[in-house]
Image 1 (tube, rainbow, N blue to C red):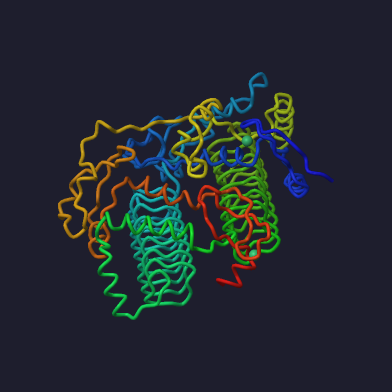
Image 2: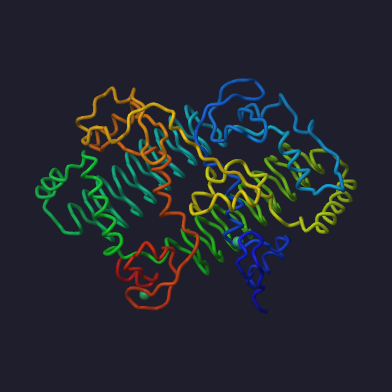
Length: 551
Ligand SMILES: [Zn+2]
Ligand SMILES: [Zn+2]
């Protein structure tokens, strides 16, 4: 059997469906995609707001709330505890099916009436200025985290404490400006490192203590640029580096970038303990293909961000799920097709439906069965009407497609999708009926960050009362009191850019979904690696050579 060739309805590029994909599409029982892989992910992730934190009011109680949903929401917003409560019923918005109208148009009408929760997350203490946060305490202006404490301006972390500006880290404490780091304490400006302590500018290091500007290093202490020093020499050198000065940190960062380009041996991918799998950031996976940031999963294709998935295809943000197809952000799902934010079973075209089964085209339902457009039917009625709708949708070429851009959560450029596809053009999204917003805050008064003292030691304590203006976005931001204490304690200069700009800059290096052809730096065999050619990385190693030479 040969690959099946198709043409993408959104970008016009040709794409192919492999034999393995075809088999899984059949098993999951969904229609074949009409979009290429990138356009599928792009659409899915546009329903997950990254957003800009703002204050608002509940459309139920009028109570104030903090959300990343846009100012002009397309539907009423309730505080999530109200949304999960019993003061309203999504069934009140039930609609009859109209065979003359496209089904997804009808669903959009329903979607725009049904209230949506103001944020994602539960079981937190003092985490109001956060989104997608679970069992965490005292976090501030951060998104996507589990079991975190005293975390600020951070994204996608698990069990991280007392840290600032960290992205995709696990089990870290007192860290600053780190990404993809594990089990580390007091490391700063570091990437892809594990089990390190009291160090700066590490790249792919393990079990290092008191190291500075090191790469591919294992089990060392008191090294600078991979050269061994005595403790005394090391301490003396570190003092001379002026780490409290913003200008000098910029120089170190520039130097670090050159090292990353020219000296670091880069792993072909960041996969650990996988078998018959390909993609990036795979951990303990079996038979997973073209996947990214997924662990403990098997028999999957084209998955982005997941844990414990089985037999899923074209899904993003679906955790602990099985037999999911063309679906986004559904946790604990089973046999869901074309669904969004719905922990449910045996259903199609659901949005924010909780623990439902055998439902079709519903929004905001909880624990329901045999519903269509939020109306209750008997099992027999449900099956007949569902089959009729599917037949009508097939005639219109609607069936099997994910929710279209006009149904997305808000401006594309404030969605998670934009983190993965920052090059996306406004006009392309508008053409597809999506949304875009250029937030300008030039009217806001504040101090340009260029006027801040260069060295943290010269920063007065009352800086926390001063509004600062980001030179890139013109957005206002502040230095919080705890934050200033952290910087002074750790001799870190004040950041000059808005925290969302800082997060996005870190994410640029962690969101590459496409592999590029390279030759292994050691054995020269052809490999695929997740580094765009424009990064100019000189030494990329195949898995075997990396293991042999770096370990
Ligand atoms: Zn495409
Ligand atoms: Zn090699």
